[in-house]
Amino acid sequence: MNTLIDVQNLTLQFRTDEGLVTAVDNVSFTLDKGEVMGLVGESGSGKSVTAKALMHLNASNAVYSPDAKITLFTEDGPVDVLSLRKPAELKVVRGGAVSMIFQEPMASFAPAMTIGKQMIEQLQLHSDMSKAQARNLSVEMLDRVGISDAGKRIDQYAFELSGGMRQRAMIAMALSTKPKLLIADEPTTALDVTIQAQVIDLMKDLVDEFHMGIIFITHDLGVVAQTADRVNVMYLGRLIEEGPVREVIRTPKHPYTQGLIAALPKLEDLDAPLTPVPGDIPSPLERPPGCVFHTRCGQVVGAACSSVAPEELAIDDTHKVACHIYSEAGV
Image (cartoon, rainbow, N blue to C red; front, side):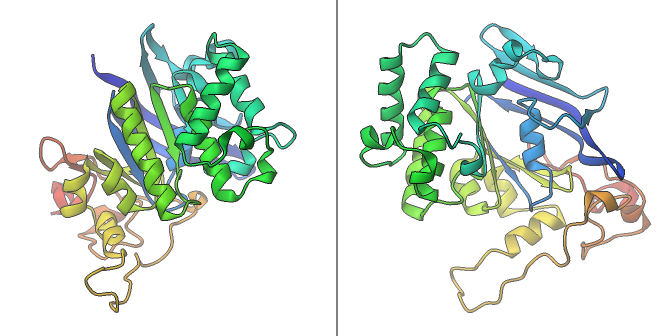
């Protein structure tokens, strides 16, 4: 079996003073070993919440739907992620078989511990390495992500590093345990283009070396085009389009995906004005009925768009879209 993780019917709500707020709505996808999947969408689309669900990291006020199921396939057999409760059980999805590069590195490092102490501690927690072996591997990983003088930097604190260096140190820490699944939440946002290219190349090397799967969360379609095999587009907690990355970028089917691509700068015409997707993403507290994108869509085809949630339809064997343009309800 080549499947690494299988997510089915994931609906996730949060208990708030205003009631239950839906952050992820009926999301299903699979990721194979050695595959890189891009997860794309504006801020507020539910990308990070979905990713944290795979590690059971969402806050205690999170409510999962009864039929939601996340299955991680490890060498020791399948793991039902949402059934894990005890810290010892959760180790497999929190730094063991699964690692995550978080969006904000300063919030991910303990300010009173050196970078090296944190890296060494996690390696000893998830392996039988000695302290010396863990330190040597940590220095090697810091060097591989482009941190100069890694033997010295490892004994520094997070506040002593620049923003870009903290981001690279966090990437090194996530990669050092050689996870089977790496969740990368905007991992190259704070990096200049040279280091960004190094990090992307490093991830590709690790996929080849360890047959690791990666979920790459980003706003940058250019990065997705360079790194991903497949792309899933999210909007307000829904998966609205998925398929091979080149096919989705070259022939996007959903109006939202088309809008994201149209908003990119055109290298052949640098004077051309940018064309952003009109409007703003609604608050989860004011979730639109029907298709969640219909309030910003320029291709509304009928009453179904504002009243009926579109089902996911297959454009071909690998490309799917959830839009009434392609369904009988919208005809």
